[in-house]
Length: 233
Image (cartoon, rainbow, N blue to C red; front, side, top):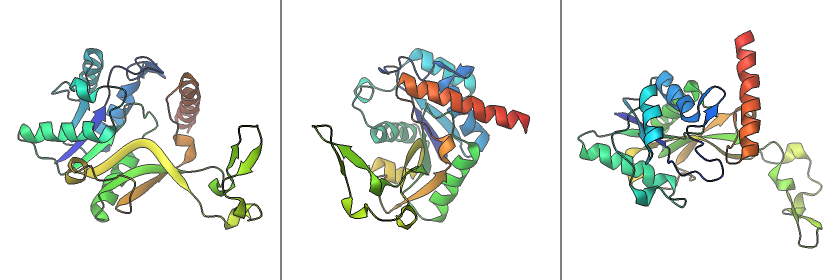
């Protein structure tokens, strides 16, 4: 049994109500629900929320909200893994035993069904604990600099001052869209960032954190451009 868990609490601070705020014509969370449905990967798509409005929007789009997330898992400090583990445990207690579980973020409008499918393929085919989305850094991280208290600059890795960019190892970062894992890996709180995980590489133009109003504006511009190109092709 394959389960999607979409964490979506109601108490977002930096962008109030961001999980149901309109993004390019729809409540934000509906983009993730639609991608999950179109992927054809899931027997159940469950939204874990403490909020009635988020629940209503999610159900209207075809997801299930069979429980309300408890208050101790709905504050500003709760990590993602306990929320997913809670949903898995709830399903198990209800007689539903997931084997593979995908945590899909509610604020991931760029997520594509094909990427979700690829994540499942890697999880199953590579005997991994997790498979999650990443993207390349646009600039060599070995050339990163820090600004000191006096406003001066120093390199994090000065030994690479004269190393050619093409000779530096490419680096990737978490794309913040989805995290496939075995049910056991989630329940045992195994680390996602480990040698037992596999990476689904996404193009940079489809990756944008949405944590601040500036992020939101940039994401809408990027999304509108991508959607316009697809409609014309």
